Image (cartoon, rainbow, N blue to C red; front, side):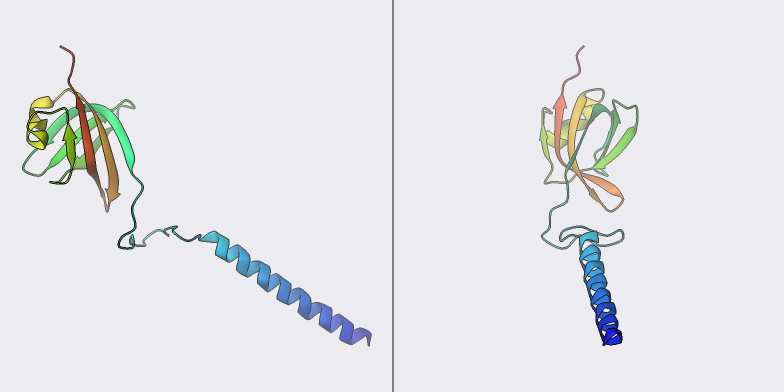
Length: 126
């Protein structure tokens, strides 16, 4: 009788340990979390970030711009026809004449590049 009870307790302990392991494994990846190397599912939005700094350069043909942040790092951004630009005459086309101005760039990571959704320009003080 004691061996049956011990066997039963051993099996019950294994079952409980397996259930605990399954719960812990499920907590490792919550719904909506993205593992490294995974593609963003269609229709799911990415986290938007904001960068502030001085507008260093603009390449209107390639639709890119470079910003020096307050931390003295240079960041590169791409923009497209959907990017909202405020504070620059002629929208994105007017960015090239705004070098040296302070900008706030709202962006999301897209592969290896930063895609700007909104660029706010504050004219440099003369």
